[in-house]
Length: 600
Image (cartoon, rainbow, N blue to C red; front, side, top):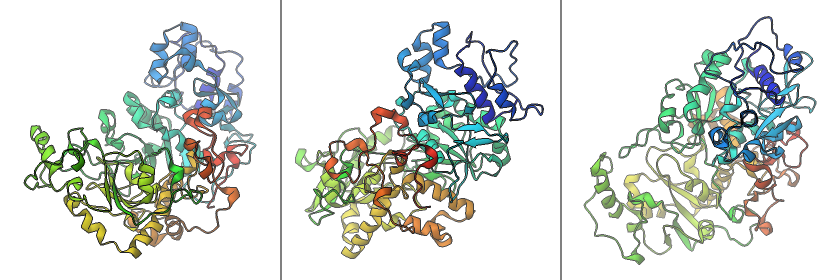
């Protein structure tokens, strides 16, 4: 019996028949056998009855291909909390609900969506039913629809892992459903390949943040089902995690650090070494991993001055030089807002603190308040005309849109402030030592931001005062391009009247392409060896963005129709967190094979 994608086809079809008599009867991975070529799949999908007599599980017992929670509830009449709860569902209605739009790519019209995952019709398989076996006995993508590979690399092979690792899990419980968006964009952008032996990269379509005890299981399934992990020792394998600490959050992820040492982690965690004063681990490895931007959004994004239609907001003005907001309430180490001059003033300055000396244990708590209240605190030293200093602001959209510089402390090893302020046309001022920002050093962050070492926080006013008007203008122009790289517009919709060719997904794949074509090149030198990357990084690829190719507008601002550069994307209430099939870039197109591919 074939393994890999052929196994998924068989499993999905057998479960779709809905005739599982007992929960104990479980379909497991089958071992490859020379007498069972891939073409045999066509015959298997026509089995008249399920289960066959004397089914023998030939795979390892650790990797049960469990029946859909719907079957278990229907046959064994178990409590939904015992079954559906394991996958993030709260009730039998949500666990068994049949809502076509609630599945990945709406099953491409080739399956039935039940409980958030696709029951493919006979002959089709995969997490979104996009695969089938052609007349020549070879797998095909979106057969009959004219699917063509992208003109530019990389080619990516997607592992079709058992749905207990991904699509059985309730996507609505994911606060950062990026793994599925990445999955569908690989397909709709033409970067998916079924030629696994010659693929540039391999994508495991899960979010390692949500796997918990199954973290090791999905890797083991991959290396026991396909030969490519073992052949590469995990290199060229893409592992995505939206965890706050990237690939180092929790015991489960720390336990796989060694076996994924050659893999490429896609995370927002850019800390490259253990922080000198707290326990934050340094997990990011430049040139191997990629720091991706958090898909942070906020109401009022269409008011950005980088949106040409947002006439009610002017461009960066000279009236507000620096904005210190929103500040993390934990900046003082006590989970409380910093005290402002208008609310009682500061403590008397404390003795200077050696920022390079690690402080741990009980001493760290006593250390936190003095550090916050000394002159190293920007709140203490930066109160001057032209500066707005607040812990939070109801007018943050206007504030960020009219300030020249915006403080963007990155928390531990990642943050969203630098992404948000850039999106509003404000020059980010990141503060956190040993942290690389999204797509850094591949993108030249010094061209559109001012990074300040923690030891120089008190010098921020002097540092920013040295930026000349000419330099500021150049940085603002570079930031207008960087803002496109830092937003996942092809997934969730445009903000700037763009077509998505420079968005965060495209930027991730361009980095992977350069690594494939120029192996060993330091990431800060990509522009020196690759002309396409040089043009891409500066948003200057050949060809203009026509009005007809612009993305639908981000739909989180439904009350801002007067500033939307294009019509709104269809709302998430229609599709849920799986979003528009193929991504926002595919809205209005009949299928994923014919979605636009700008920049080609």
